[in-house]
Image (cartoon, rainbow, N blue to C red; front, side):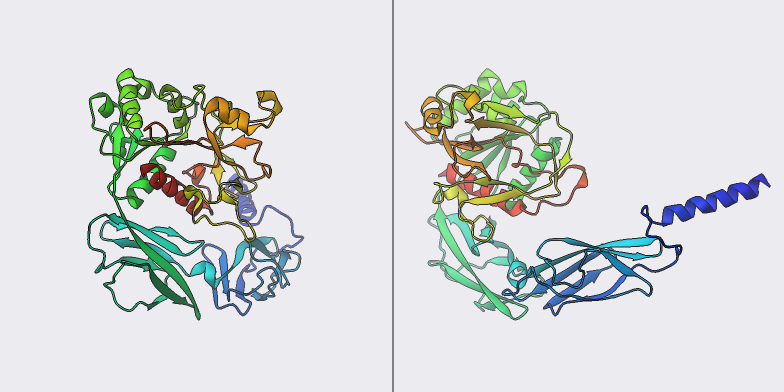
Length: 459
C-alpha cells in the first residue's frame, strides 16, 4: 500500500514538472504548444524549433516596426503575448511570443532584420595580413608591408552564407587604388571598398602576469588576447617576468596591458623597478601604450599624467556578474574625426555616440574613470582637469550631451618624443560574457574601437 502511495505521489510530481509554472486555467497537459508557421512576406523566414528562434529578413526599405505576420499554431493552442501578435507589431528587436495550450506553454523569440544587415563580408585577408572591416560603412582596410608589390594580390574572404560576389570576377587584383567588392544577397547588392595601405608594420605586444598566453587564467584578459591573436599580424604575448629578464621591447610599435581582476590593483611584478624602467624607456622612445581596465593603474608608475593620477572615481570591483537592462555606450562629440572612432556602428541619426555593450549581457561592472562633478573640485570644467592632469577627454558616457561629466577614454598625446597613451577603464569595456550570458550584440564596436586604437598608437 505504501509503495502504491509513493508511486502516485511521484506521478503527481512529474506532472507538475512538465506543466508550466503559471496557471493558464487549463486542465490538459498533453496539448502541443508549437508555432507551425510564421510568415510575413519576408525575403527569408526561418523557424528553429530547437532554439525557439524565428528570424525574418526583409527588403532593406521595409519598416520593421509595422510587421503583420500570419501565424498557424498547434490545435488548441493560442498566443497570450504579445498583445497583438499578428500586428502591426514592432519586430525590429527581439519579441517573445508565448504559445499556450492547457497548462503548457512555449516561448519563441522573434526578430526581424533587413537584407542590408545580413549581407556582409565577414573576413578578408591578403596572405597573413588581415583586413579591418568597418561594417557600418562597408570599408575594409588592409595594412600591408611598405615596399612590397600590391599590383597582383590574391585576397581570401568569407561572406554571408548564400550571398555571392558579383564583382570583381578576377581573383588576383591590383590594389594600387581601392577596389570595390559588390556582394549580392536576396536580390540586393552592396559594395565594400577595400583599401590596401602600405605601412611600416610593427608588432603589437600584449602584456600580462602569466608566463605564457596559454597560461592566462582571467577570462576577460584571455578573451582580449584571443581576439588580438586572431585579428592582428603576429602579435606577441610578453610576460612582465620576461621584461624583467631583459626582453627587447624596441621592436614593438604599441604595448597593450589589459588587466581585469576583481580588485582594483595590478600584480606587483608589473611595478617592479626593472620592469618600470624598461617600459619607461619604450615609451620615451616613441612607443604607444594602451592601458585598459585596472591596467590603467600602470600609468601612475610610468609618470604618464602630469599630476600622477589616472582616475578619481572607481567602483564595481568585487561585483558579482549582473545582467544589463539597457545598452551601454559612449559619446565622442567634438572628436568625430579622431581615427579611433572610424567605422563604428551607430544608431540611425547618430553621428557622435555608439553602443559598445548590449542589453542582456552579464558583466561585473568595473570602473576607474574621471568624474568632473562638483564634489571632485572640477565643477564640470574639463579644461581645468586637462591642465592639471595632461589628459585629453576623447569620450564620455552615452548620456553626457555636454561632454563635461566624465572622461571614460583618455588620451595622453605624443610630446617630446614620447609615444601616446590611451586609457579605458569603464564598465562597458568588457570582453567576456559572464555566466554564459547572451553574446554582446555590439561586440563589433568593441573590436573596431580597440583595433583603431592599436593602429593609431603604433604610428
